[in-house]
Picture 1 (cartoon, helix red, strand yellow):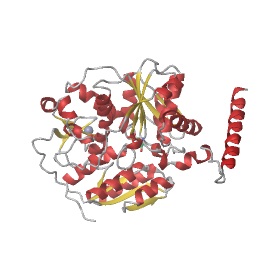
Picture 2 (spheres, protein in one colour):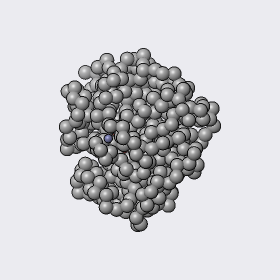
Picture 3 (tube, helix red, strand yellow):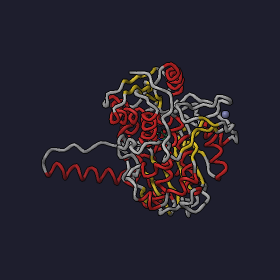
Picture 4 (cartoon, protein in one colour):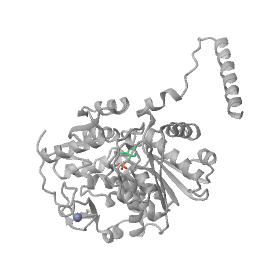
Amino acid sequence: MTQATQSPTKVDSKASFTGLKCKECGTEYEATAIHVCELCFGPLEVSYDYSAIARRVTRATIEAGPKSIWRYRDFLPVATDNPIDVGTGMTPLLQANRLARRLGLKKLYIKNDAVNMPTLSFKDRVVSVALTRAKELGFTTVSCASTGNLANSTAAIAAHAGLDCCVFIPSDLEAGKVLGTLIYGPTVMSVQGNYDQVNRLCCEVANTYGWGFVNINLRPYYSEGSKTLGYEVVEQLGWELPDHIVAPLASGSLFTKIHKGFQEFIKVGLIEDKHVRFSGAQAEGCSPIAKAFQEGRDFITPVKPNTIAKSLAIGNPADAVYALEIARKTGGNIESVNDAEIIEAIKLLAETEGIFTETAGGTTIAVLKKLVEAGKIDPEETTVAYITGNGLKTQEAVQEYAGQPLTIEAKLDSFERALERSRTLERLDWQQVSV
Ligand SMILES: *Cc1c(COP(=O)(O)O)cnc(C)c1O
Ligand SMILES: [Zn+2]
């Protein structure tokens, strides 16, 4: 693994991003592999020339683009005409009528990134952008600190792009997420500690080795990939904003970037302005942002995570203050649910809509339910729930609760007896529920 050059490639004239800017003090920087402001330690964010984008981009030019996140290339921080395109993005936006009826909503949509390519979570979006930029900046080895899905995406997309890859994960991850990383052949460091400890270690490694860490020194580029979850929903709703969105929070980045995506489409004149409420979902066993929201604080108190929603288990979330601000100013909420509610919600989504999501998606649906029951989502609102990962990766969370197949002999009468037994059991189930 070789050292990377840190000098920026020349930004070509077609690129619409102009550099990096501190979110706190506004100091501007060149678009290199840096992520923290030297003056105030605030996070850096990519800035764009929106009037140039407005001149160049129309609904028609986007619709004529590739069937992937790269149809929004003008809004992404890359200079190349040949981004790494592994078919990431343009996942289904499903009208969820049966789930809506169960919850008491009228217009509910599921944005289904459980089937995002190539590794079945929304992280493929952020990694496609980060690794495209990593190549432009001259990195030959890429890395990440992951709660599971990010390691899958980084390993897979690095393999496709021919980049060396070394990823760091906490040692207590689900088997599906570990195998779903190892198979692509990266170096995998299983760290004895939780995500926050993995992240701290990775910050040290990033400072010593010349590697491109997608969520550390490449974080400004990486996080922009999440905006495509905003753009796609708008395009799929017929170039209109929804009234309310519900999304899960780990670091809080995804949540804030969906907001940025909506705002950018308004700014360049692609859509009408409209007020959208932003609600966030956390698991009770790791809910520092939900706690701060409920207690009216604008800062979080870090926690030690303990939940089955491991992909959301960040105890010291980097973008918490911005997520809190967006939920508050849009009139949304940030709620948490316990592990039992998460499992129930995974089953509810599967049984009503035919979507098998992981624990993060269970968290989102359980919070959606809780908010509807508390009157915090109006049944008339067009609501979009973001499903960010696939249930086949967190099988141990639901194994005990999904039931068992009926084992029979290969004979008709054995089948018939089993069928009768299962119908009797179903009736008993119903009687128990109705007493
Ligand atoms: C990483 C992740 C999230 C949240 O990401 P942040 O941007 O850190 O808030 C949500 N869902 C799944 C499945 C994830 O892997
Ligand atoms: Zn600053």
